[in-house]
View (cartoon, one colour):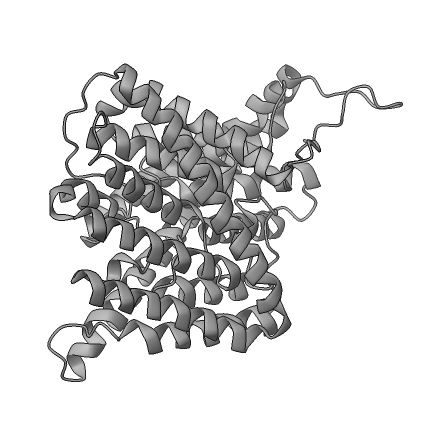
Length: 444
């Protein structure tokens, strides 16, 4: 089922129509459908466990110790513990806890069965105790690994290409509902994997099938358990005005600003990553302490909750937009600095995904700029998300969709502005990476 490059001596590119019409492809789709349901259920359970850990460690535990509410200093020791646990998982368990998020959203393939426990434990320590990363990368790894191991058990002689396609479909199923739309999750994985050409549809159909089934499983389990779907949604989106000439000028400015900020976060995280690797456990604990101290500084200086600096920011995006009037410019700028530094520290040492923190930082930056003339909050919110996402992910089409689909019908109105900000940010970050003009190579 794997495509070989056309033009290679002695090889011939497969005919996509012949592949789709084959009996093996139909069997592959049946296997994907059968595996998509349990993989999606496992992903839902993982997200539910993360949510329960967050509630336990930041709400129930301080209350059980006699505190009235969560003290502002509470994240400091808790993030140090998170660093120790993550560092131990990365250092001593197979697979180094999954992919290194400081290197961007990279498709490293499905982990082996021996590597799955390390990926899960590092992610639980990272996400459950408040580091500034999201769940998408661990979910993709766990979904792909579970699907690949299951298909090898069910069909030991399966071709490597078909096994890889089933593993990819497992990743689709695991992340299907997380980003608010199964189509968006599928598009993210498609763009990140670099799929292209005539074989794109052949490889994508099993993933779309798994993604649709996974979304249904998330909805069903969320309704049955009462836990919700853990999907990226905004409860209320204000009306977005039609784009103006001033708004397009702001799109260029926001794209440029996000490129500078994203390049700074990325370079800092990569520099810290090299130092963390030398003394994994101690350095990861130090990065955890850094995140905790930044959350404390934000809470004490702004009078707001330290949790706004912690976690991925996925659940806080809706409140950020809905309560925009409650944030002063000073509070938003302080939040940007503290969460941006906490994001860089988390990228360097912990294990998780880079998407949601970049969305939150872009949204906060856009809302801070919306206090200036010629820029309304909703388009500023959307442009900031798109520009900061592409600065961190290097996935321009996914970044546009993340910023616009999140806003529902209002996303259509602001899409032209988002496209401009994403393009400006994308071009600039590539130039920042290679100032000498050396061709940029996407990480694999």
